[in-house]
Image (cartoon, rainbow, N blue to C red; front, side, top):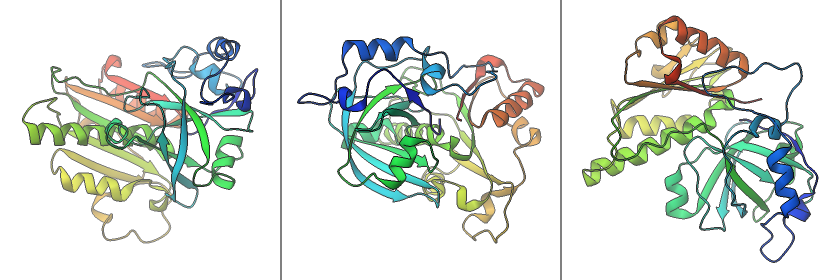
Length: 316
């Protein structure tokens, strides 16, 4: 989810009131729980004549009860239009699964954001850190991140979402195909990092979940808009044959750097690209703009992928 908008019956200062500044009033929680409609469906499509806000899209999704204060401890430019935030999480009970998102509460801003997490659960466990990559838009929370957010800025977060990959040690190995469009890479990058953590643990300890192969297809207008590309290349080098990636660019006007060239295809992700991965033990995770998801879903249906093996989240 690139961003989302919430208009609720309370202000963020009310939400953060008190010594801990992280617990909303009971009435605020009631508003959060009941003022919306579904956002993310699995194996289905969403059709609406108007653009739904974040609460409407996520009302039927899982949400944690825990709302945690967080402090910005790092800000970098992931691209010309995307900032990457590192957030130190205050609450030790705060957890998430790879692929989920957060409600993003900003003091003094009445609009609440929704952003997919781009870091791994392992980073939170090891360092108490969560990361978000947010594209610049006029959406108030995204605008705040790009124009007002500084080191030590304080916000509050709550985890939600039913789009995730969370295998357990006793589960049978599966192959994954991850398909991302634009900033839809965020939850899939979290899943990719989680897989790397699981694979690293399995290789070092000899137990835990044994992962199958992972293929990432990532489409953007040009290579400058491919987020996390150096990290992704690093994962491919760290786990050769286990993690692979094909970057797709649709409007490339400059020369592609030598490091990326072997992994870049000009043009959209096609049926021919995907059909080679069809098998009974493959799961497909897709995140991107709604037209892309609907197009990819049709491609997968055409090549015989069962609907119960396809999971997606639309960003808006």
